[in-house]
Every structure is written in C-alpha cells, then in structure tokens.
Image 1: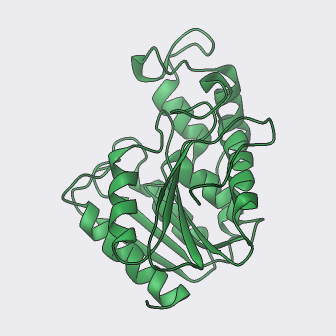
Image 2: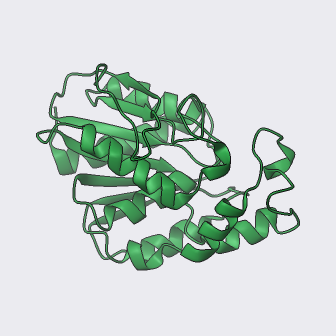
Amino acid sequence: MHSLEMSNSAGEVIDRAFHPATRRDTLVILGHGVTGNKDRPLLVAIAEGLASRGWPCLRISFSGNGESGGRFEDSCITKEVGDLKSVLSAVPDYVRVVYAGHSMGAAVGVLTAADDLRIRVLVSLAGMTHTAEFVRREFGDVMPGQGNMWDDEDCPLSKTYVSDLAMIGNTLHSAARVTQPWLLIHGTEDDVVPIGDGRDAHAAAVCDKRWVEIAGAGHSFDETSYPAIIEAMDGWLSVHLGKA
C-alpha cells in the first residue's frame, strides 16, 4: 500500500498513511469528518491500535483536505463518495476492505457501502445521518460563500457543501440498503452529531449490525475512549473476517 498511487476521478491526489500489519488479505480504510484530515488523533489511534492487533490500516484525507489535492470549497459528501470509490479501485481485488468513517466520513461510508460491495465490513464512528439538519443546526446563521465553518478561516462554508448536504437530506434510505456487517459507535455526549443520528441509522439497518454507546464520550472521542473503540472494532472484524 506504500507504493499505490491514489487519486480521484479529477486527478486530485489522495494523501494517505499506511500502517502495515500481519494480515495481508485485509485493509481497514479510515476516513475523517468535515474540516478533518487523515492525521486526526482518533484516526491515528485507531490505526495504531488495530495494526498492533494484525489489521493493516490506511488513513486517507479526502480531496480538498489535509495534503490531498483539490479545493476545500469543493468538498462535500457526494465528492467524497467518489474519492472513496477511487481509493477502493486502487486496492488489489484479493484484499478484503473494511471502511471506518468518522462523522461526515461515516455518511460517506453508508452511501458508498449501499452500492459498492467492495466494502466488506462497515464501521460508523459518531456517524452523521441527518445531513440537512446538520447544516441547518451548525451553519444556519452563516452565509454560504461568505462565512466560515465554526469561524475557521481555513474552512469556508461553500454553496457546494450546503446544497449537497441539503440535497441528500439524510442517509436512512441508504442505511436500509447496506448488506455488509455494520458496527455503529457513538458517544453519549456528542454535541456535534447527536447520538440520535446513530440510533436512527442503526434502526434503519436490516443487515447484521451492532450498536455501541460510549458513556461520556464527545464527538471526536478521546484517549479514554479510544481503547473501547479499538476493542469493539477488533472484535467485530474478528467475527466477520476471521481471527488472526
């Protein structure tokens, strides 16, 4: 995975970091949320923890984020679905892919997995389900094309982003079409994506699924909750992809 060149359909390079491990036929791809990148502490902790248990991991930055190509203003769920599918196309056919997404990256995973069986196992971490509500709640008082996300000048709120999340509305229809084993993890104190989003996705799913609440955890989790996430993911992957 070190040598794989990854870019999306627009030719924008997808920055990534690979964590090698003993299993050669499996890869856990980790995707971040809005304003994030592959180096967010949560993704790094999960990748290191899973790799130590034998699961190779690949952290990616979606286009327009981190060191990946493209403009942040063009970032949205629909474009990131395309990014993820491009990454999947770069993975050898014999490799079983797990996708684990955080926040908006989880919405990307649901929309992708519903139509793409190259994802063998799905994991949602503080997953965003009600996308239109998220935009209204977090950015309803910000003018698209003029203001910024959470007053961060590096993260302008674009018309593309707002219209895309409003168009999607929610991911429940896709959640009902996911057939892969699906692990959903959410913190009880999440003040960015309410835990109700995760519960609604879990309720809509008809696949083999597991719901895990982490008491006291916020949206990005923290060092006290990382071990529980790693333990839950390792257990779920071992059940569905086999123990080491």
